[in-house]
Length: 483
Length: 117
Image (cartoon, each protein chain N blue to C red):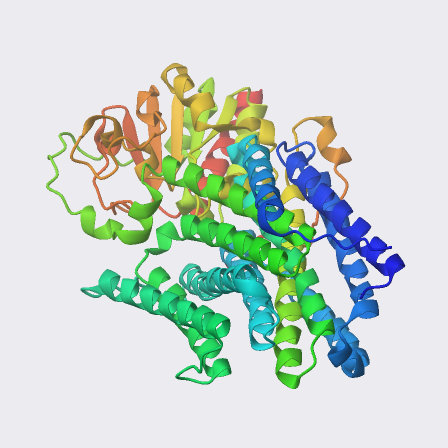
């Protein structure tokens, strides 16, 4: 039994951590207080980790001879895991952020699974409830680990194409059922004290193997563009697994933190899926690329190319410009140049705003982060519902590297795969410039009527190169204009 | 005296229910502009699993348990430290326009953005 003082200290630290986590997440709900929010949560984490070493005062008799070694192992593991992750997190470029979140999330799932493994292999779970909860936590944690790793590989382009074979979903269902069956068998064998067909450690390894394989199989067929939603789901999964293992370890801080994240992750997933006009099950179980092949009504009109410099100068003499950035901008790393161009326009008295679609970028809100990184103040950045009515009264809409999120087919064409998706009304602006690398289609694989509109001109080229030309053009006339 | 409380049966369900509701409400108020840092921030919060890992490792009594416990702490620590590092970096970038922009404390200038992606 734990002595009274360490027990109180651990309890107090865990209580503080649970409070600080929720308070910190709450502070993250506004850009003004957000940086302090993560700091507050960090204090809670540090307190809980330091206090957890006080568990050393209450280890079981069997573990006492190993205590010094175990403490040393814990310190090494903390330093090694924490140090490597800290270093990689500091160094990663902002466009690679989604895969890093996937990786860290997978680690959390793996940790929850490993805790469950220790409990199961040591036969520490007491009674049916604890055993079942441990197994469910282990299943979710393991799926989250292997699934997150596949998500990371897809986003990092280690795996380039979704893997789809006929009958895949039926096979996945079989693997899932097999995992559950092994889990159920473990419960039966333990409770009935029966002799298992396979010796117990083997059975537990089989359970984990099945769960890990299921995580891989479930994630492989999902397209790279849907990965953000998948990461969000796995984030919620890991939270859930941590909460369940917290129950097994009788640790309320794990229970609360895990469940808060589980619920928050689920809500975030639903918000993302809604912004993409798809249901979560649609993302997980249907292949988006396959449904996009539909007969398309021909679009009248033609594409009208124009020079970057002409477009730049036109905007210099406009009174209002709304910029719609998409992932193409991030690919060409043009955010810095874009903000430079915006500052030039602002100096010339042009009102400039940014309109961000909820699914711009590879993760909801990623475009906001990328713009913030380039120095764009957040009060210039507007979300879809706040700015959509303004396009009609705006001189120029500048669409950079975005396609589907400004496709009017979402409003009008019932047969379109993106029908019903909320879009930015860029086509309603008096003049539209679209910066694009070529005539290629967007991620949904459909033509965009916006590009063929009378008010639209195309500026072909890499976003960053185009912006450099625009800046040069505006600078070039800046001298004479100022005089 | 004994302070150990058992979170069993309905008490555990109540804790899960209230915590889940709290998470739902807290995140419901977050604007879309902060969704990425928020996902990363909640990712950091479940890094608390490292505490469970430390508990399991300290109570390990076989080599097998020590090895698995070691990985639990290693992975949990990675989750927590990595989650904090990226969340903090992202949030520090959000700056308002106007004179306030220069008051921002840490700008993480070295987090170079133009390296190859």
